[in-house]
Image (cartoon, rainbow, N blue to C red; front, side):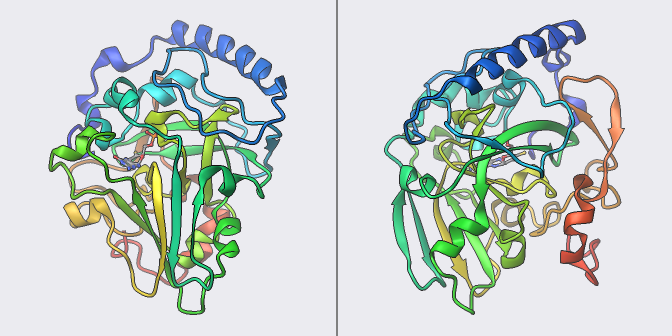
Length: 322
Ligand code: MTE
């Protein structure tokens, strides 16, 4: 994030148009086959150590239904999504997370839900999944460095999860924390950020129906570079809000710290709503390059989700609360 600007993107990282179309046709057919494979088993956290280019890998998630909240835009290819990732704990270059994914062991994995809740608890990921019918939601995602992707996430609403733990009347924010384990996440042995990675949402943002706990993509368990086994997805905010590999969710009375705003408060705010009218101090946020395409496109307010979320910020000065 702080490391590279869009102008720094190596041209070799931009997919050749014909390659892109060929791969897309291939991926579509394999994804369709995968979706028809009925495993009948509960969703597993089994994730392969390496990510093969081109072919969606990982355990197929059963009984995934389409969500009406999806965009009808064409999703990015599986290998663009897994191969061009930001996960600083696995390296600070876009290709590092796929290369270093084998360090991260995601089975077993548990998540603590605590703070301002009547029933705090620690749950294994499989238990978190069971009561939730999984949905495929195709969301557009916009990164702060002016690139974007369309990703077919699989997950369930964060609101459903939080309700199970009975938030108290004092719960005003939700704080999230990534695993802290430099053996599994070797990037944590370098002080690129203060570890563990932390993020936060206001309670109404967390309870919004668009806010997703993602456990998969392309119909399969979440690949490690994308934050296996459990990550947040907030599609109207810049990508850095979508914290990966979560182990703790804490409901709080006060606004929690967030990794990037703590590291560089003049550049990254708590809200981080996609806003083409508020530039990052070092680059414009008015347009974006969709990975896998050549020409830039105009960035939409709230990443195009304004009809659903603008009311959350009514009356707020979004230049100040960036
Ligand atoms: N979560 C953790 N734990 N560590 C990170 O470095 N990077 C963030 C976010 N979540 C990050 C993280 C940033 S900067 C972005 S743009 C998105 O993840 C990228 O998600 P993706 O790689 O799945 O597209």
